[in-house]
Every structure is written in structure tokens, then in C-alpha cells.
Length: 251
Image (tube, rainbow, N blue to C red):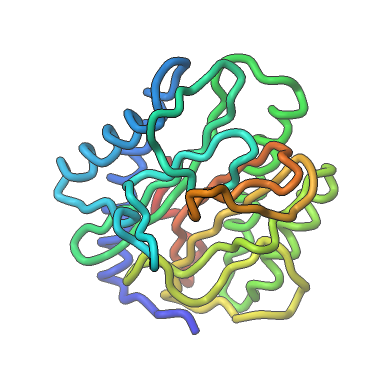
């Protein structure tokens, strides 16, 4: 069951989301050939701390807490890539997922960026995934269900020949890093929780160039495609209002 946020909390989340979007934008500008994923994390963490926030991913999870404030997932990695000594290369696609706690509230967002030249099919993967997120948000109307949104995303993505990850989903956000309800990127119309005013949800399509099955790296956090096909990931925190959706983390 979703935790309903007050109007005052949504105003604060919108202000914090704007700050987080600026931080992600600054970090994305630093993604280039030769930089390490650890350097990107150091930048993101520093920028969050400078604005009086806390990197909400750092120390999150059990039994092995996530060790960084930024998830950096490359190519076949879907989410939760641990930053470190890995060097970004020409032709990589790099997903940055970032979360911040500020004023006791949480915001969360992600963006996938190409490094240098990528082929036509990879460009299409990024475009379809980003558009799938836009489609999810446009369907955030009071009275619709999470199944309606998941169905819209799934049918759009699969129509373009890509896979929708099933084992990973979006989530509620605001009072914690992850809250109920789960927000799948697949589903059937008229199923799942009904959208209500005051819900704040993190929509995050995770789309693959191949199958939707997943696998874990040996670090227990990084999740990749089982078939090693490329994957893209875009995410926004969104508030449901009687006047339509508000993208709290708009870039």
C-alpha cells in the first residue's frame, strides 16, 4: 500500500528533486572516455554533500550494504553497478542511478548516456527506454492502475523489439529509499494498485536488447542481462496530483 505524501512534502520533494537533477546533470557531463566509475561516484557524493544532502544509496541494503552513493552500470549491466577502478571506454552506454536524502525525504532518478559513437540499434534502445518512461508518466492519472501503466510500457517496448526486465521494478519513494508499492514495467490493464492523489512513485523502465532474464555479478550487487545483451535504464520520481503527474526530478 502506497504511503500518501502531504502537499507540503510534495513541495519539498519537488525542490529536492530539482537539486538532485542538477547534480545528476553535472555528473553526466563528466562521463567521458578515460574517467573511472569511482571518479564519477566521488563527484556525485561531493555534490550531494555540498547541498546538505546525504547519498541515500550509500550503506543501503543487507547483508552487504551498497558501498557508494552512485550506481554506475555499463553496457550489459542493468542496475546497481558498484563504482570503482573501471575505466569508461568509447562506445559504452553508461547508466547513472542516484538517490538523495534531504530534509528527511528521499528522491531517486537515473539516466543512460552514450559515450562517443554508438550504432543505430543502441541509439534506438536508449530512445525507446526514455520514451517508455515518458509514456509511464503520461499515464499517471488518478484512477488508473499500476497494471495500466505497466501494460503501456511493456507493449510499447516489445513493439519495438526489445525486452522488459521482469525481476526488477520501480517503487514508492519519499519517506525511504524504497517503499511500497512495487511498480512493474509490465502488466495487465485494470490490475494492481489504483493511483491516488499524494502517491509518489519512482518509475524506472529497464529495457534490454535481448532477453529479460537477469544474472548477478560476483560482487552481490551488480545485476546484468543473462544473455549479455545491452541494457538501458531511465528513472524519475513522480508525484500523483489531481492536476496530473509532477516530475519531481525533471532534468
